[in-house]
Length: 98
Image 1: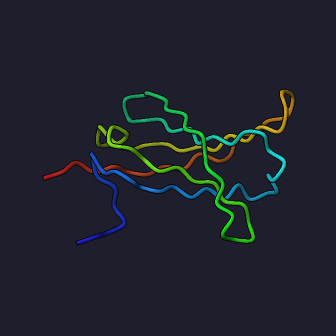
Image 2: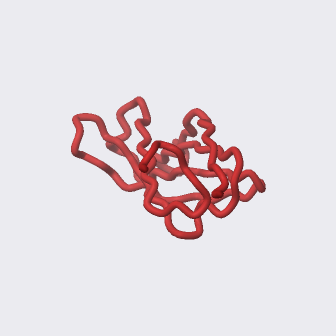
């Protein structure tokens, strides 16, 4: 059965991030994750242009969700060395397996 829950060891989970503003001139877009352990993982986001909005995404790999608990996600958009912004922090849960 497939559901919308994330479990430890899941691979290929896709996070879509709508920055809510025009970021077409950004030189760098990253998604910052904070694991329940406090470890911070920063991932370069890929541009998805299938929509009229510019949406960025990341796909997770085999080692990404290695611990159950509450994770935090935040976008980072850089336009220049003196112009960069952080998005809102979103929380999500990664569940343990049976």
